[in-house]
Image (cartoon, rainbow, N blue to C red; front, side, top):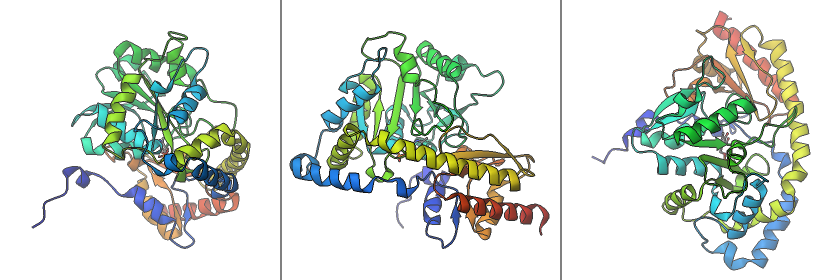
Length: 398
Ligand SMILES: Cc1ncc(COP(=O)(O)O)c(C=O)c1O
């Protein structure tokens, strides 16, 4: 008999793999993933940069590099996020193999088995996946719920986890007062406050509020940053996910701890993609692509919401998100089981992300997350019509 697999595997799900595999099913309309529109990838610019960096820095891009990341990229990121009140240098920056690795490393350095996470609820599924091997306990932060009290919400947790800009899965923006209250509570309680920010650049109606790490820096303007906010970013949504480049910006003691964990994870992020990322950032590629992304995604959001208003209003309520990639729709009938709906939807040729996967206990089944960035307006409308058909089949049997 073979040795058994670790116990946590029995408590997980393979929904992410299912979503990625859904892309291979012919004619399925995939509204589940958080995928960018592939035609926005800056193919020619990246191809030229890639060739250039291999020729100019062959040893650096093809060899092993420092665990913390390419020094020049760390410097560029420190400069990018510094401001009059937030003073950063490379000791505040760790380059990661995209955002997912940042989440994984945070779990490794902060969680012992059964540790307590105060997590914005509902919670990004990839974060739940990353931390599951530690069998953490979750305190649900309902930031817009009645009577939410930040100090008691954060006290005693190993860390708090938030996605303040156009959250995954809800698409919601956390307002500046709540950001300030969370930052104050983190300073007061000493709890690390993770600010996961893949979507901050994707805003369609006005700009997002200041970053929490910025608000934290304002408490001692100009001093080297030592505060409790652990800011995480990625190039996945603003340039291309295949680069697998992300970063953590935090107090140097946190960067050192994360580097120790990274050493045992992948030793270093690819030197090739780090050099490509540095050249892309220096050339202003993010800023060049951003208007196209915003314009494309705003039109898709509007198309999705118009189709939803026409076909899904009978069953669901939702807010139109002001940025990001998702609409979060909550069933009017609390008994509507969106796990069951997914089975009907797949049969009708459409898929979405059911709310149970954003709950560590898999118990919340009343909502669905619909992505609007990956499909054309026409496909979005067709997907919504198929979903309405699946709802009709499920609720009336016809
Ligand atoms: C909230 C959040 N954090 C992190 C990530 C990780 O993305 P990546 O590993 O591609 O940077 C995602 C991806 O969808 C996300 O939605």
